[in-house]
Image 1 (cartoon, helix red, strand yellow):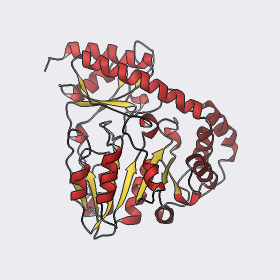
Image 2 (tube, helix red, strand yellow):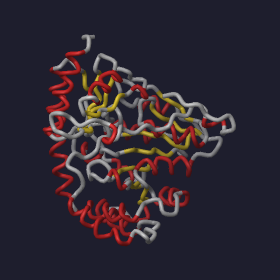
Image 3 (cartoon, helix red, strand yellow):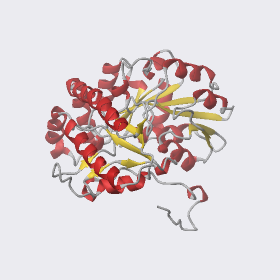
Image 4 (cartoon, one colour):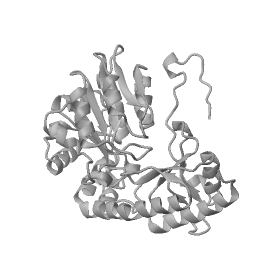
Length: 372
């Protein structure tokens, strides 16, 4: 939807699109099959949060009149112990998107630029354009980050290179060798921001890198992860970054004083201790994602290979129209017109029951629409 900006607003807001989240369940009718809305639009954890985490959050509710611990000291210490890093190398954000923005605030001066893939997570370009507007967009190759071309697009003014691995919305990824080549080819002043929001789903897959290994080796990069996806705490907004201590200190300097709330910190602390819940989440995804992929292929749709908890699917039809027709049947998916992919949908991997409900509704929609 186009927006009209007031003429007195600053010029850098002109043409700047806001981030559009997935449609909330309150705005959709229930599915006749399940009697509730099936939301497969925002890559949330279909198992929900850890019960251990929720018990801790509920116990902390009487204390919400108190400010949270500003630097999130307990959570940073716990993450440091879990990951094998000093707390001084960890910074906590209001979700991982906060850290993406903090990197731009900390490292982009008015004369600097950032290099971004055209098909990457939309928030990368938005934060850079809001800060100084100097975003260098590099086309994808085969729906994947073209890291060689991104390295070639850098110069002495480049301060940030944003890469999502796996990428949202495509689900595609870059290999260890590709990430290593990118790091070795960047200017000395450039910081790689490696967004690993879907790391837990991809961990251990053949050729998929663990960005923290490069931090351990002294690489100049910020690895960004989140408690929103595999940990099931999207509503509590907790993300974290791991980087050399001087990078973490820079982000800590520019972050808001209380950028992670008290309940989020407590919930994340307990979620981190419940790795069995994370394992169940990943196991469900590794069963249901290939099943969903096969079902879509059988219907003549084209999903991209994915290591995340969603599939990016070429429907061969008007994606917005499919979205609307599914919505009327109580199923929410994500159309990708905002990414210049008008035929594509992003479909989160749900439970078996949710995925079956989506496929049943999809069959009805496809039967109504002309074949491509």
